[in-house]
Image 1 (tube, rainbow, N blue to C red):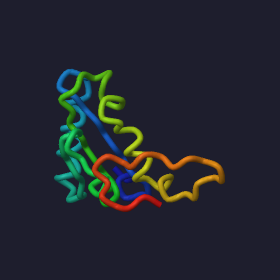
Image 2: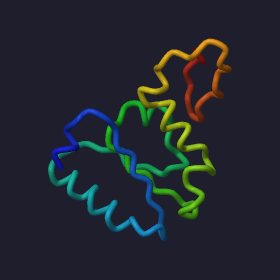
Image 3: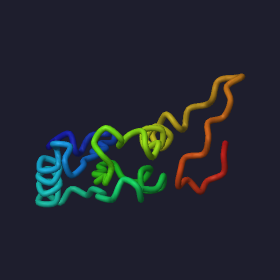
Length: 107
């Protein structure tokens, strides 16, 4: 798991019946054994602050597999809390809506 020490962020979303729950739990177990910090939380409860301050994130979702990214606008939240959210906006571009759970003031 050399990649766990590299720069970047891993976000793993798994569901009860999506097919990857055992592998996700196994990966979290290996990280824990090696003393590598990670965040595990419910996808519906994750905050922008959680995403900004954790590099390895495992999110369990109660949603059906094909609803995960769209139902709670998770993908937008992942992008806005990544380095992409820090890029300057192009002139004439309208501001994007606030990220759910983000308590900071809009830029």
